[in-house]
Image 1: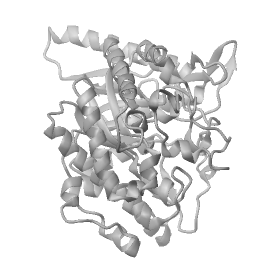
Image 2: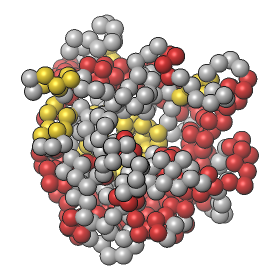
Image 3: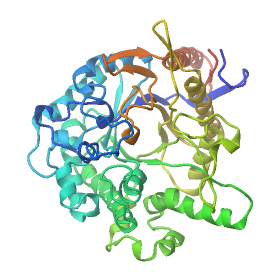
Length: 469
């Protein structure tokens, strides 16, 4: 079967292209206070009445802390060669600045060793939003002191895991932590203050650069980078005010992070817009933030359509809409990758998250999710098109391996290619997982055929993979 992709489409990927799945600690681990783990800002936020749509929390989630071996067996069965996961900072250092918790670190050592035993490359994220709650009491990411606590944490994780993991990401989606967590207040820690939000964004970027320097001084051999959530911005109309608003929103989402990381400066138009809410930047900060990286991770889910008058009705596009209310727009991924490639001197790029929340249909023990399968297939094709046009792509990772705690949405939204029955914790591969496994199996087979042919003829370093099943 072909999923909304022309039957004659052929997709080109580098021979060393990485295929993976992704998760994060708070969303799947559970064991919220077990084995010495401290509380995170999300543990606290979930107790705020009305903060989570279904009133749930991550206390149990997918119970991955106890079921990790079953879960990495699932990963191996899919045929991927990479798993992106995050370390829970309060699990390994409960207060964020005090004693280290050996039981917590031992858990991640077992996980990494188990992945390597199964031939899966570990991709570690240090900060996927679960700041130790004790640090929030002293200012959290709005305090410059947290920058130094993060560098200590990064250094400790590198000491224990750095010799075995393939890559280390400092932060996942700093825009989410700063804007949703500190400006809109709909994510932890629930603050609504634009000036604080922008200071948080600066400290996240500063801690990224400082951590990279510290890890390299330790002799870290893993690739080092950051993951940003990015989207192309399109005006809702040809009206000048819509175009002006689009430029500003692009500045706040993309250029605010990409410019300091790759140009050593914040965009002047955004600084002017922020006025007195602009962050306090000390001498030398921007040089540190611009420390060269080994890779850039991009999380993509949809485009943004901008209207100066307010919100834009996503249903006006006539396209499919995910269960999150997001437009399905795969060509936006190609557009975004080309824009980043053309506008910045970026290292190789991974798509570190891409997927969709959709309603699943359960029938005779099988989980049917044709819209998710379609979504993944079309976005993989979009990555292929970016490669064809010259973008240096390194890998693609599906979000998410498992249905999980979807932050402020609780358990109402399901992104997983593996269904989780939260009452029994039973895992079931959805049709999208079966499709992904089949796709990767065909890719592997074609790579083997390529390798055999390459011994006889002088071909290029590319292999061609069909998307059809």
